[in-house]
Length: 65
Image (cartoon, rainbow, N blue to C red):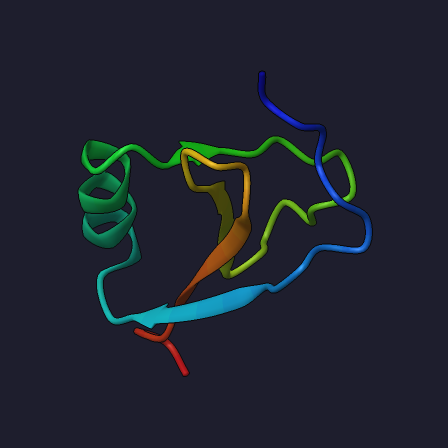
């Protein structure tokens, strides 16, 4: 039985990548899934993902920073 998500999250990581799209694709191949959030700005420089256990993390685009 899978437990519900813990609030607040146990841990939250921000991963920084020069090629965010490639990193998100690689992580999704490993089992991550994108998290939809209505509060995310349209021009956000990050994507929210969750691992197979439900832990959320962001992949931040560093190519323009």
